[in-house]
Image 1 (cartoon, rainbow, N blue to C red):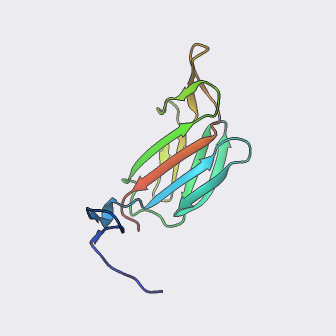
Image 2 (cartoon, rainbow, N blue to C red):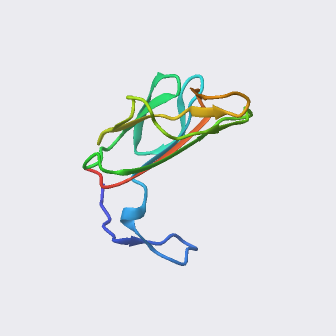
Length: 131
């Protein structure tokens, strides 16, 4: 396999180029209900279902350190709930080889309080240097 080394990239039709370092090193879109499964992903080896609303994304190629950036979001179909993406538990973990966070911390508009709940669509992107 050959390696192409570049410092900037511009897709066909784009007017501006961007630094290669700005391209996500890993990303995933997965189903967080029932049998957890990736819809699509890049640089993700597997998912681990740790229990209700808690998943671990395991990378195919590790990051050079645990100091990468991540963005996450999730939505639930047809329930009237909005997802609150904060973590008040001990299950938050960022390692160079994996990422764990309770994604389904939801606030239900029809009841008081915040509860953990599996969500139908979980999306993450990860930016940083790979090992």
